[in-house]
Amino acid sequence: AGVSAPANSQASHQSTQALVENPFLAVLVGFAIVVGVLLAGRQFIPKVLHEVVRLRNRELFLITLVLICLGTAAITAAAGLSLAIGAFIAGLALSESEYGHQAFAEVLPFRDTLASLFFVSVGMLLDISFVFSHFGLVCLVVFVIVLLKVFATAIPAMLAGFPVRTSLIAGGTIAQVGEFSFVLGSRGADVGLLTGDDYQTFLAAAVITMAAAPLLT
Image (cartoon, rainbow, N blue to C red; front, side, top):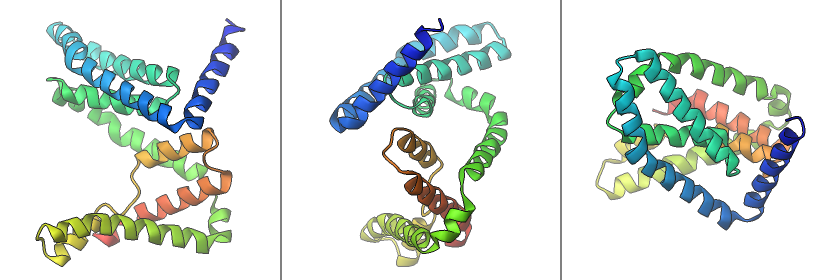
């Protein structure tokens, strides 16, 4: 076991590097995994959840949800993708099933707690001294992100006939960096796509846009 663990870790790292070096392969693998899991969500997962629901055991239902999430994450990790992406895909698969609303109700109590821990971890990763020493660069990145995201929504809305004010407000509602971007950014830093400074710039810009989000709507 002690020998197999490093071997598995090395194999996982090599598969990840192969995906990084071949973007086309990464897209194909990612697409295949998403399609495969969603198809399984429509065929396999509903049957499993149906049998669990028949037992009328709420704890068992919750445990089954956790196992589905961890299992999907393990599959994506074995394929060289992120654990978080696997968990995200598992959520998509569950939402496709007839028990999606029940599953959401079961995990809802954990959402706020886990979200709090998530943002605590983001705060621990952010280097405040880097923000002050690269303040101009961070502000420029924030400006570009907000500008692109606002106009990416506002322009199509105006072309669809909505008033300018309504279109700009709609754009402002999505001006902040989404939470899932932290997962992608962290993965990019892990595999070397982002340098340490690049990752800190991204974190700083993301945190600032999220903090400024209420002012943009």
